[in-house]
Length: 187
Length: 187
DNA sequence: AATAAAATTTTACAAATGATAAATAAAACA
DNA sequence: TGTTTTATTTATCATTTGTAAAATTTTATT
Image (cartoon, rainbow over all chains, first blue to last red):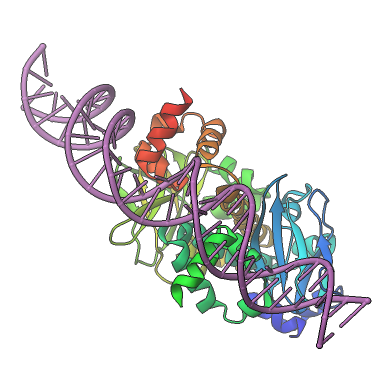
């Protein structure tokens, strides 16, 4: 997937604005299982996923939860770190070998201050992520774990082939044992 | 709480930008229990809360869940409707008599296209709401209902005096019976 | 103050989910 | 291919949370 395409699916940008971003982006590749971001650090980059799939997770001593999957065309941001400037709480792990477009957060902040359309791009990006997150929060309350599993499969076919079930269970907010039960009941 | 103060706690704005917004805002008052927004409609306004407290809820036939409380200084947006232009899924109900600052969504969209600092204000607003929502989603998985209740009280003392327990239970993602159990165990 | 209405708590029982460990299946590797 | 390692499923039991209904408390109204 190309960078301009990724950017424009968030918000259409004039050529000049696209060029300002493209000029500051570097293409990088990482192997499977690479830890792209670590909790507790201030993250200095954003990434756009050209190919591959990643997960974001947070953990305490005993638990670990996967709260986001990112695939081709999606944007990897330590939202907390990017917004507040403080260390983030999430780790980003590559679940496949990935090709990413890297952009320094500082440079994007600079562009937000210079370019009206890029500022509106940033707004649209955050707004889009917000409604997705809000919908997930609500769906967790309205729907049973089985319903949420079926919907995830429907919205995201192929995910099952690319991601370990333990991560899917965690994403759905249940244990792996519960997910196994749900899967056996469906068949 | 004054409008400029509300706006600037999201993102500092130059006087000219503040003036552009202020000029388009109208102060309105509603009685307790007024339904400010209804699901299924395209919402044409945003509101800033000068005083009072409100809740956002969504429902299916049998269930209803409260997923947000807004108090003084907060912004009421049907995020879904505002972002996608389609009808929203939330109702907004006033839990107290409120004084609100109303702004037409269309006019704000216009300002986003003219004023760099206002576009950045919109970006910061969405980013802030996003991390709050993301944190809630994660906390729902990491923490027990009892912990979430205690944290809500700690972060938001006074809420208990202003909001019915059935809404708090719903917000925490549990039934009212469960919340009663938690409350009796704490004492 | 007395009554009615609404909100909250309590009780009893059912259903869903979690924890742990063992069994099985799948994947990775020599 | 055979062996080891890792991932997933199954089984058992404990715990949490939900449902429904009744009891109690609080609030509103006459």
